[in-house]
Amino acid sequence: MPGHMTAVERLVPRPATWQSRRVAGWFVVGVTASLLELGLVWLLHDQLGWPLRVATAVAAEGLILGKFFVADHWVFGHAWPAVSRLVRYHGASAGAFAVSWLVINGLAELVGLPYVAAFVVGTAAAFAWSLVTNFLWVWAMPSRDNG
Image 1 (cartoon, helix red, strand yellow):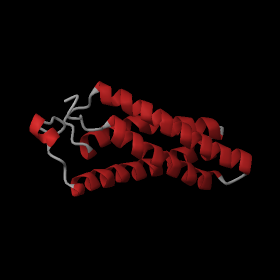
Image 2 (cartoon, one colour):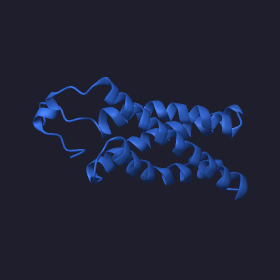
Image 3 (cartoon, one colour):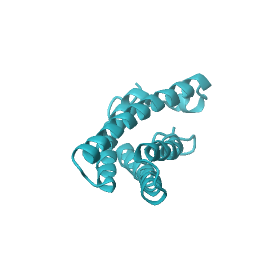
């Protein structure tokens, strides 16, 4: 069953192509979500006049749950979401949000970079954070020691 490994499966190393497919799937989910998030920032900030600080915060939080459910099932193969993974993902997302929010708003408001360009840089920084935390913490495979 996807998401549930036997003792033998935990001991057998996964092929590199398997991990590459997971990273590629995770990347597709992230890019798609980032484009949706940018559209939501545009709607909230440019069309509705919300302050950029508020629009970026609301847009980021709005995508967190959707990304979790899609990645948990489609990328990592879990039949059902688990509260423990959701809590870890939300923690990792909070870190990625902090990185993104600081970079976007710092570049836009302190340096004067247009917010779309700042969004691209902030998203790249958050992707790096997320790649590490998602694969090494949220959806990390159980080790042989803690089964």
